[in-house]
Length: 131
Image (tube, rainbow, N blue to C red; front, side, top):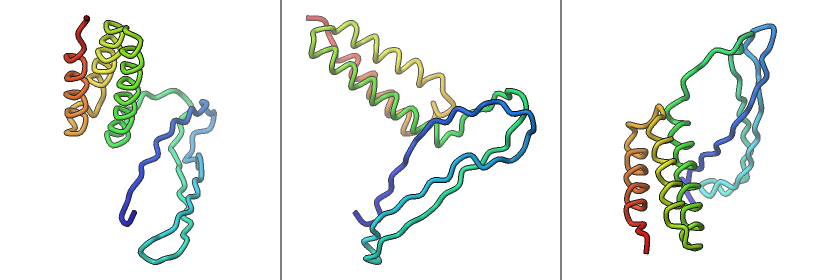
């Protein structure tokens, strides 16, 4: 669709290094058909990171964290649905409660999308009643 956007979330585990530097980590190449220009387009994006010789805890980027929370919520909803299909209501509630607790500990907990997601997870949890 015209003006459509997609976010691609990935996780990279990088080993510790001895010589800190600003390293190129990965290069992504994306090809797509641009409906506005009626042409195929290829774009390259390079991901780099400042590396240190020891583990330095960093806080997660809020925009990335929102997407990770979206995935966490979606997976919890899917798992809870599977459990309810098998009559395991209390286990489904536990899955949703765990996802809510996990999301509530993240850096993006005050983001509007994340607040709405937590509200929807609570609504689903509250709607699950044992027969």
